[in-house]
Length: 398
Image (cartoon, rainbow, N blue to C red):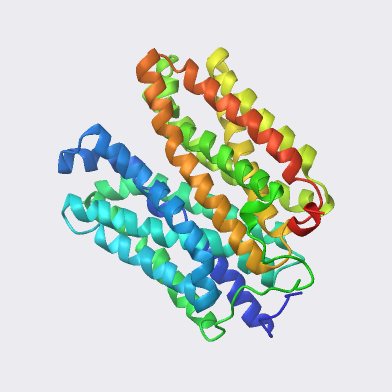
């Protein structure tokens, strides 16, 4: 049952389809750069530092823009603000087709702005319209995000090799997904509804930044993203240094991304049965820490550690997003917590790969970066113990 709109089965289907299509835009448009990054470097003559900045630019945009999304939704409504987010993504994808390095960076930043807005507001929309199916809808859109990004990453390099297409049009092909999303989401624009405050008797006007529970959820997502983006960025280098071939390293890297999408299939029935997710959050994050050390001390089992890392980090991401809805008292508060958690989370995600790279340069080994991942996993597990408790922000303050 939906909390408010839509009023018909067809309208409900359109809403769910629209949510999943928006989710399809939230990772592929920037992770798709990695397979053609060497082509981009050669085409524009970019330095290694500029190429690295290109991959972290969307994460910086996420951190800067995320806190503003909830305020924008209060003024314009969730539906229209999400529509604006899609327009930003489409504009950014189009800008990257223009054959200048400046437009490559500008387009990537614009994509980051659009993704940041949608990242923040989707949990709020789910909180409002699917209050009894938060775990189901969150798992579904995270699964969609992972499958589409993995599929696009697999296809973008072969597309770039087709006669005369090149990396620019290959990356630009993601606009087809965005256009489809815009068309479907237009059916929601007449609603112009805002995040709803339904718990006026509680102190939901209090800033979410002042709740310990909000910080536990924020750091659960942030530390998990910190670990995840270090692995996404440096896994091939870690594997080749421990004796794996470049082909193996590339295959394992792809397997890692696919593994991050798989928890959506398992957590849907599990979360429906668990009111308290503390133990689950703790175990998954600790397994992430163990897997990072496994890559360091037992590299012959790298494929196992890679799959476990992908699965556990993907599961923690789903749990964290679910907590944004499950631990808040209304959709307005959910939007504010989403902005807080994603701002801090993506700031940590942007710092992670750079810090790991600096540690490797300084020490000449991947030991320190992998121990950094393990420490992040342990801290994430401790935050999971608090954020997994069956409560809400208002109740937790009593």
